[in-house]
Length: 122
Image (tube, rainbow, N blue to C red; front, side, top):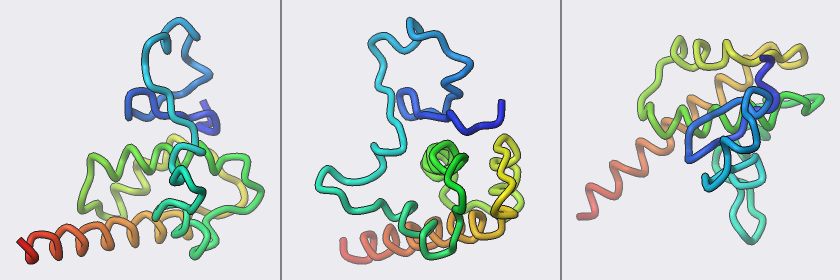
């Protein structure tokens, strides 16, 4: 239950180690590779992790990114406390979580601004 194996099953963060393969039958399972575009550019979340040095050894990063993607899909204006609470299901011994929290909050802010600009354009 360290969180490193977290994938998104039908868009919801799920621990692969706690699922049987039959439970995934007929469902969409996305790994961290599914966050990037088909032509390879990093997603906004992955790019923010890079900018904020939110990864080091990389062991936990895939699971954390999948949880963050699910979280940001549900929480459009998260507080730092909410981000830290979401991350509490992940063990990371390298980063101290500060860069991860900053990256998630930055992406949330960028997405809010983008939604506002889209509304202003209409």
